[in-house]
Amino acid sequence: MNRIDFEEIDDELFKIIIDTSILELIKNTFNVTEEEDIDEVDYQPVWTLNRETKEKQLAYVKIRCNIVPEFRKIHIADIDKAGASSLEMLEFLERNGGRKISATKR
Image (cartoon, rainbow, N blue to C red; front, side, top):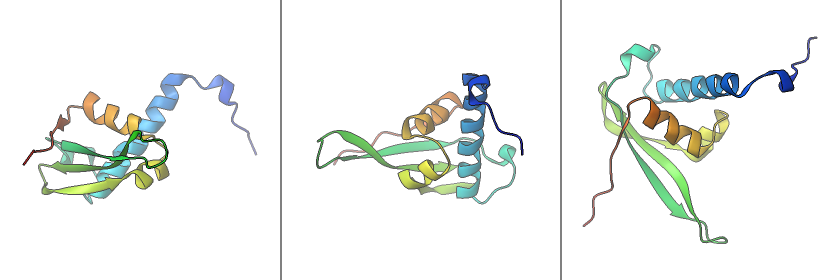
């Protein structure tokens, strides 16, 4: 069995792997098989406060697209299972034309 030498894998390849994982997570969220089916993505990060550290942390991301106009939730646990961090998820959405929706205040 061949072993992967991670020292020889550069940062760009890791970025491609993570981006691919995030894209698959988004496709699975909308039950689509082709990337081209997803267009006009809106997203809204939903934050919570860590009780111990009092730091803001991502709880989940609400996301919708042209084929599913209702928001769906992608929980942080699902992002972690995909092999990405919450920051990588938000950067991916921003970098790929996602529109960030601000929370409405009452």
